[in-house]
Image (cartoon, rainbow, N blue to C red; front, top):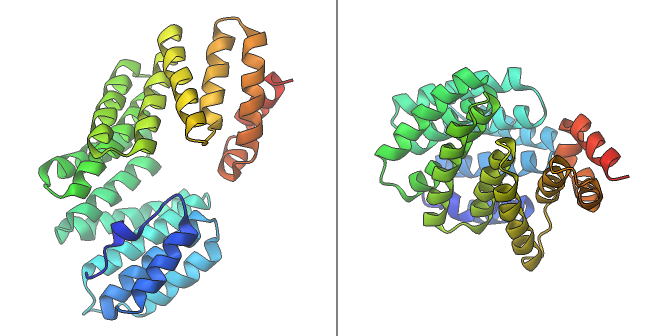
Length: 283
């Protein structure tokens, strides 16, 4: 399509992204316009304006017919699925991701096939999730598209997360290290920091507390220099000090984590027990 969808996205600022997509719509029509509208729906989903996301996708779906390019249907399915998942309804999201995968795989829409497989790797249980992540990685490794390179880091991160959930910490660590290398190649600072956090978190779970602490303290320094405090980093530092039986040192970090993570809508809704523990240990 004429508009560069990836180039228009700023996932950290959905409102700015919406404005860019609407501006691009002024010079697009037909299927190209429909693709842009699916991305506008995603900006609503990221802002948890789920009803508006569905309304936008309903309008797209009404205009899809047998002459519409398959990519439009795939994008609509992906964003409908993401909207349901973000709203907490995985049962409705999963079949949409699977249909998106089937169409994208059949039509050789490689980057969206990777996206669909990666979403299935998120919503499926760990044993099935790894299978989907491996499928997505195989596609990413076989593509020369720049976006496929960025996918390699995200997929390695997902594979590490799945292995960590299964208790396979050595394997998880290797995947997170692979993700770090991929993100360093693409020079995306935020994703580099996420990969470093994942490695340090896994080291803590392996009881390698000094290695984990050194990494998290470096992340704390970096985030403060960037004026981007991160509750997850504070939480990890607190957990390491607590594991080292240093409750007095851990307490102020739990307090910082509690303040930031309490303000995180997703965390407050989905990690209630974890947040309650952080708040209690901050007292």
